[in-house]
Length: 469
Ligand SMILES: [Zn+2]
Image (tube, rainbow, N blue to C red; front, side, top):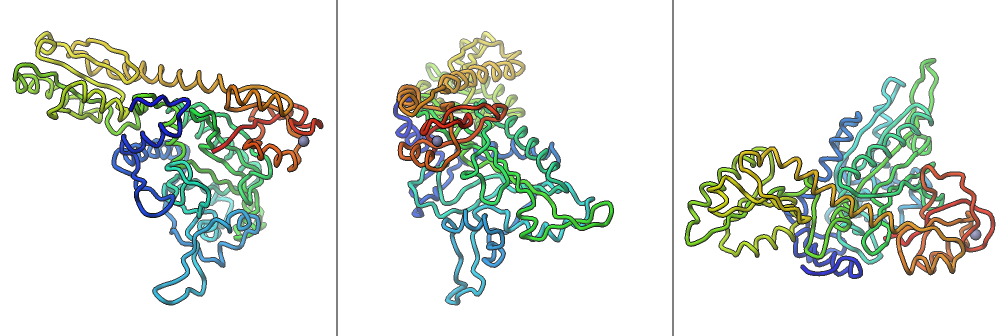
């Protein structure tokens, strides 16, 4: 690799996706790359961890069809307004035009909710909490970027149904908590931001987003949580009988994390040598590199392989006995982001020792007898350093500024998030957008802070602005 990430992030990102075999962008449909084994394994482990958290919090896994009839899709007015420009249609079956065209789901509210209306009859059927890990489709016309902006989006979306607005609001809080725990697991720092009305999910009462920063200082939305109120329940007739037998509309939430979250893990933690993957999602967790000398391959392999086989019972390991120089192997597996490396030659092995190195450069000579019990400690030390670096970058890219000229000069110097004021008008948002800024919204926990608008100077509220992907 040898590309500095900060200052050349775009170049770094394209190169690492290619070199580490994350995606192949040569597939001939815009915005639909092929996920290669190293990339898809990582992505799969990423979503498995999310699924575990959702399961632990009472969600069930299911799968809905990809196609939604136009007549059903068009029922919630705000939702259709928000999505109609960007959907892909199935219009024909063979040569015959379909009477009711089908939408490739851009998100699954409109496919799931007519069926939820059949499942939810009484207050005892709630809460209903389900999720699916699947693909959704959007006819993206802007420039696409693998894992960040595409036409086929791989994601996990959860949908819940509750009796009251308050129950759904509690679910929103639970979802924010689950997502926070999830990204903390990978050392991704983020802000939880309530989106302004013009940027909330089409059809939602309100939307919270988790936003992180990529190494170029631009913000990346890595998760969203929506309170849908009764809007979809009214459109799709999701009604239940309460304790008194009275019919009521249900309240709903939906929330999702896409492959963008995975992109943030690659981008936030990578360095000039390549990827640095968190242990739990790395397709290979420990690589073993034998150091041969004077044709003693068999002897070295005999001893080191036994250790490899033992650790393979608990971890995803690779034994790299390819006919290459050890330095080249180190370089390759470092580029791939593998967290730990065990290397040894005959002299070490005869002394009962191996060298344990991590991807941030910690190096220890370890007794073979204690190697297995050393792994959790080594993982902890590696991730601590990795996560601290990410946190330091993130914290140093949150600034405070008032007035547009000041905001511009602060951004020029530091990028990232800027806390400032906004009056709530769209005119002032448009002015910000001319400079590629956007109002991301109000930070959770900082509601109610009064601040003068960055553009017009009128009294407004405190918001976070940034330059989003
Ligand atoms: Zn203003």
